[in-house]
Amino acid sequence: MNGSTRDWASLSAQERAEAVALAAQGRPFPDPAVAAAIADRVRRLDRRDRYTRELLLGVAMTAFYGFCLAMYIAGGSVHGAPGWMFLLVLPAVPGIVIMTGEYTPRVFRGGLPPHAQTPNLRLLLDRAGPLPAAPLTIPRRHGLRAWWPLLIPAVAVVGWLTWSHLGIPADLGRGLLNFAVAALFWLVVFAARAVTRRLRGAPGNVSAPAAPITLDADGLHMRRLGEPVQWSDVYAVELVGPTPEQPDSPLAVRWSVRGRDPITVPAADMALPPETAIRASWAYQPGLAARQQEEAR
Image (tube, rainbow, N blue to C red; front, side):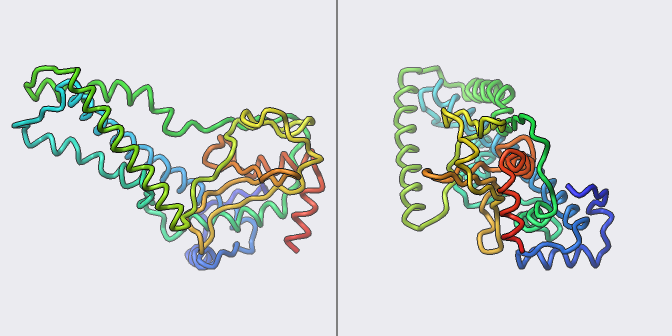
């Protein structure tokens, strides 16, 4: 946003150490060029962590559902199954741990936590201007759904090969009954988890209409909103995200709208950077940018 060409590799050891120290306090680096390098670095690390998470989930889904498919074909009978069957189940463990929210993959971050991006992006936004007032559509990032063309045949192959090596005749009727029982069991497990998290006061996922988002002179368009939100009804747009106190909060853009709950869209759901959505909003409602700069001072 500031035209700087600096990146993380070009920073000195002292600048990197200071960046990590400031991030631990939730503060930006005072030099905008360094702040831009930090924000870019954290964004790349977050993207790598996201791909790692999706890869682990993909492997887990393939192993788990492949095993379930084999049991469905065999009618649930696994008497005398070979020991390698347990090795087939093991890859599903990381995915289950990730899905329960007990583990978030963080790969070789060099001391830069996810919340280092939030204050540095805010500093850069304080110095940025609006984008040209032209219609802009922010596509949705598909995430794990983009893997479905590979996951579905992979599950079929794993399931079929597993059943064929079990040497058990097919019993689809009994398999269907076992599938229904298992589905009911997991429904109870996930319902109990949701109730437990609510009682513990744990933060849930960001509740928001998902991208694609279109910003134009008529207002803010989102598929799940129906009618567009008029710019005259939007009184704030801001970047929200992880902090040292809440390091697992998602980076997101939040539009505050008169007469309704804020509209919050996670940056991970958008195929363009969140600051693009903020600056595009400024183009149609210039007072939002002025308000942010006053609050920053």
